[in-house]
Length: 87
Image (cartoon, rainbow, N blue to C red):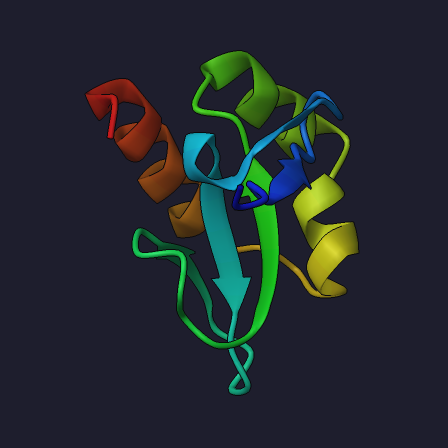
């Protein structure tokens, strides 16, 4: 039986299977991007597919702490669009 990898949401702190979460990546150039494939190289952080978790992460600056850098507003906007679309 194959083990399903679990990841922790940076918004609410619950552990879920990797496939149920949205991955955000910081690549070697320092760019922050959404990783829809889950395979982009770089430092990754995961968030639930809910606007509540995104709001918690944005308010508490959890993404900035995870990536040790300032997160641009366009990254949050892209995340909001993705969550609202139900991707």
